[in-house]
View 1: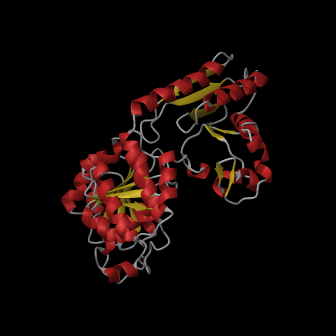
View 2 (view 1 turned 180 degrees about the horizontal axis):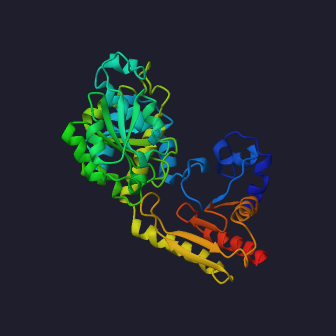
View 3 (view 1 turned 135 degrees about the horizontal axis):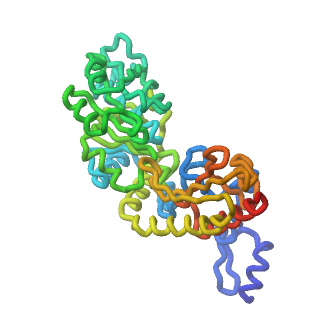
Length: 401
């Protein structure tokens, strides 16, 4: 039997182990791959927008997927795995300790829970009902950092205390103050710098925590804030590192990580019982981090710039339209293409363009920045998708001029 004949007839061969002209045929080899997105009627798209949770973050590296697959075949003790993985991760990010959490939001809740309870298991079970427990109950944050993510902290039962200056921090600190929390993505919206925040914490012996959820690249941010002296650092795993979208990292001082883990599964009767991370995600997160730290980031940057140039070149000649490549100063620090146009010359709104790209083929997601202003990144694209985005944008602008 010729190979082409064998392939032609696979559809009628029963799914059982057999041999055809000396070729071993197994059920695994005969299985037809299911396109589950198509089967479920779920739209997929080219991601020219970035690592947004509602867009399911990023795509996992092949090494991560294989780590998840391979570790799904055997059992282990969850705490033992977290111990061993935590040691490896801590070495990579230059912290005393680390643990894989159910995302950055979870890392913040668990980190603060550890600060509140210490190693007292009775207190662990009392969170978030803090009144009458003797536990502290206030977290100080800068007003400019209050953009909603602090909900992860109020989940512990703590109250947020808002400040603007170092003097206000000094006045706000009292015997109920549990934590000083800093949001890196909003650091330019506050009057107190990272270093000043850490210094205030050390002066008053109050732990400091920083949220850097989407703030790599650069890769150096993985250890920058540990080196700076923050006691706890929280980050998402399913963005630039391309680990499981449902995973994150809590890293920092060992005594605080140990205490945070008392509120994590496999323990029950805790605030974090529902923040479960399975063994596959724990290993997948480690593999993603290890790959990311050792990766050639300069080569990635050059590739992203090339993709942006492809898109920019395709549309930059339209009258009344300008393209500009900008690098964000804080989170998602990648080459970002901004496109703006004169509505008198290019007769399409940003919203309509966004809808046309979303509903077209292939479906493409971009960022709508206003009436006549869109932006896009290329770091979440697969090879060749930049050319497809360039083609579709050119088609839409040609119809609009």
